[in-house]
Image (cartoon, rainbow, N blue to C red; front, side):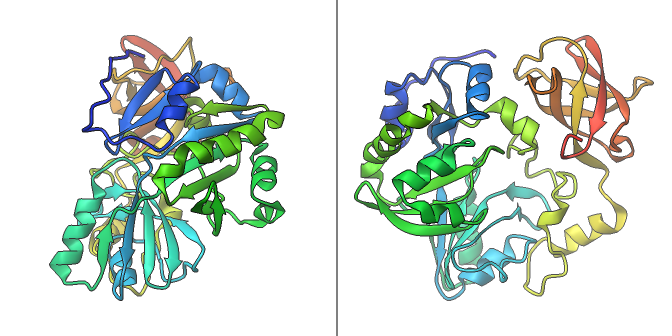
Length: 370
């Protein structure tokens, strides 16, 4: 992967955990919501091996929140997603695609319900705040839409339950997936959610006072020594093996939820008004022209880069493109997500991948990598 130097200018907002990430040796960053996101401390491979065995602490302060609060808060959230949010309980989160009037995915946040009339959208990388504010103003909704002082710290890995139980209490073991509880840590209010951008299990600690970022990091770091804790980051290898999609890479505003294989996160017949109802009804009636699938790729290493890898059928016809790719230690081959024409998306279908002139055999696999 090519790297470029980055100047941490005042234009880039610091994460509350940025200093600790630098002190612990973060050597590669990317930009995310106009903030730095650590990507690598040692290597993708070594951090992957540690993540699937132990526990890691991640600076994901760039995972910003959009707060929607007021009498029309539920109406506004329902309007921007095809998922039924009325059934979301206080203390619960739901993964929900946000879609425009054409059905295009604008973002794919976790929607957290803090009160009957108060929500957080825990967003991926995009300027979705401005879109939501514009809709609220244009429709005359009685709400306030803003970015609160909230910065998640992730504790991820199979030992995360033990670490969080030790720091917070045994009751955290009972938190259900995508649910959250309130607490106080490092002298600051937090929300403790069972969630995170890995398939290894863990929590996101939503810190509600950015000045306490280093203290919160230190609290988990010190308690985590007995669990072989290390600093880490959302891991490219693990996320593709797990099937976690990346907004802006595996899907964009030019992709609808059917194409992104997000069918189970839509409730097209929900009672509430939502702006993409007509557009998605048309796609549902005809079926999407393309879909996101998993691929296993034969051949040697799969270096991450910006170079496009095209997907072709066995006769050489271009049928789509790789969206994310890496080498999988688990499978001993290249793995990828690819957006390809629907007739070729059945598991077991043989295709070819043009890896910058190196044409490789590949096979379509289902979402669970069975």
